Image (cartoon, rainbow, N blue to C red; front, side):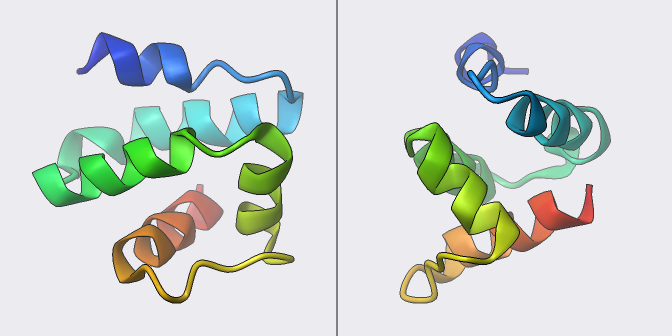
Length: 76
């Protein structure tokens, strides 16, 4: 597992920490290289933006890979 990604999963919002920790435990090992790259792009978002994406109040429909990752995060 990529240590940088683990570090980037540590956020300032408890809600994000919970969702991202579950995702890392349940799904990360099964991701493809493209999905890992899309996940990295999601982690580059600010906490409020990332939470809005997960909650559905904001979307990234123009980026299919990120939209798929958001759906996976919502399942965790």
